[in-house]
Image (cartoon, rainbow, N blue to C red; front, side):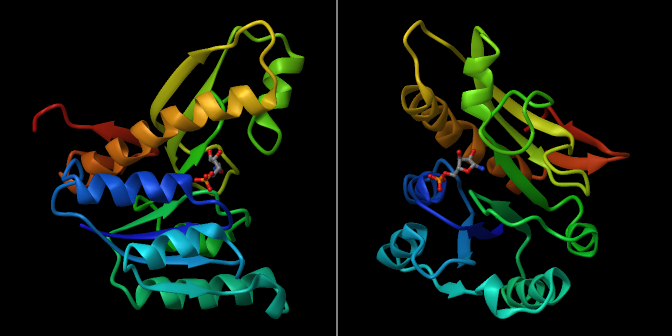
Length: 203
Ligand code: GRF
């Protein structure tokens, strides 16, 4: 299974995929390329250190979202990817782009969706006095952070938690569930059917 990872920042989730490929928890899977819209994303350094091809497509150089997404799509498709992994990719994608990859484009979001789509999820969970937080891997659809959930991880919120402590604990769960979702896809057990994420129990 060939993965292409899109990111804009630190790339700790990318690192989890690199590690999972290296220690064979993601068997028969390769990361064909990592693409960033930001030249200074540390995720690009992680990729280079792992010997993975990288590309940077700077959204600021394009006149419209559509033109950026077209360039991005051409770049992705040059790798013949089976699955596109959004790992902290901080651009909203056009409906055309999302439709092109429907069923093979997944994202991880740092909340227990459908709670808190969008930004500042940990602050919002703290402000609401929630007792738990978490992360959700989901298929990407045209609705922002609204596609069908594949897997969620929950953690308790403790007294005295702030966004730093909370995001660190959620992130460490992300690093487990995101490669696992990709593993299911690579095994042919996970698909998007009639707007639902379907996981086949049989291995
Ligand atoms: C994570 O919080 C993820 O849930 C969100 O973006 C962040 C990416 O972190 N979509 P990293 O770049 O993988 O460290």
